[in-house]
Length: 93
Image (cartoon, rainbow, N blue to C red; front, side):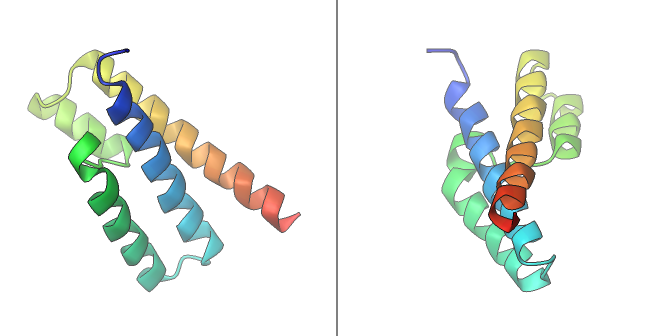
């Protein structure tokens, strides 16, 4: 198994659920906050639940992530967000 792979998958799935919750609710603050809290609880122990490329970059600058982890986290977060948008568009079509 690839080192860090569970964390990358956790970031992808966490970002997917978080973004899908936000766009499906129309940006409701309560839903967004609840979704974020749930994702942090579910994947925080696996990947620290950064869920945002800016947070991942900050953790890299701080020294908490390697370059490989940074690229994998950002890639997973981008794919998770894109998959959420595509899922929403399929549901709404």
